[in-house]
Image (cartoon, rainbow, N blue to C red; front, side, top):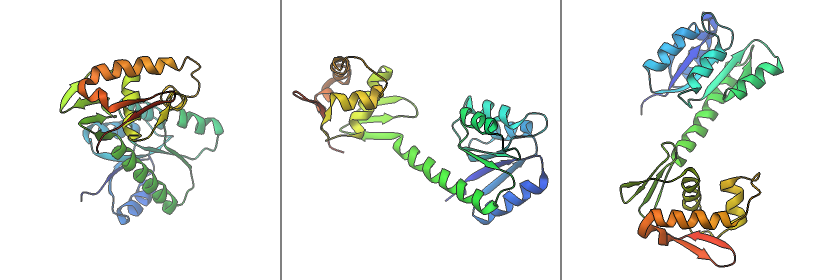
Amino acid sequence: MDKRKILVVDDESRMRKLVRDFLVKSGYDVMEAGDGEAALDLFYAHKDIALIVLDVMMPKIDGWQVCREIRSSSKVPIIMLTARTDEQDELQGFQLGVDEYISKPFSPKILVARIEAILRRTSQMEENELLSCGGIQIDKAAHQVLIDGRPVELSYKEFELLAYFVENRGIALSREKILNNVWNYDYFGDARTIDTHVKKLRSKLGEKGDLIKTIWGMGYKLEADK
């Protein structure tokens, strides 16, 4: 099995070496960058980077800008390192899509543990991005649906609704539960909107539309073999 690749970005060479040594000892392949510009060059050159450890204060391009640039095209996990303990910095990091925020000085062992936890979570999420049952295949990351290998065009809510049915196949789902999970809790519309979307979804799925069963007086259930 190939080693997972970590990009460590910090303008302090001693800090990079410290983090690198612990990561290498833990079985990771490590790349280093001493400034934000070099970090972006490496990121775009290597599509298999599993996680980025990113310092905030750096020359040329700071960590915030690097994070913005990466987040415009990638969901790769990012752990932000900073010598500052300002709450606003931490809030800004999370608003930019940072996965973890660690203040210096820190324990390298704790950093490695955080990295391992994030990568485990990311692996589980990637596995959950692909769903299939009864000839229906859903790629949540690509927002694509295949029926017996043929692509089907769905609206955003039709896609979310189908994914929710497949994730909960064999389970009777009330209209209220579907509203709460697909339209979210802040939706106060009429539950009949679900019936309209289910009707359109069944039509687009063709014969597979029959897998979505109506449970009278309650809601719906998708019945399909794995």
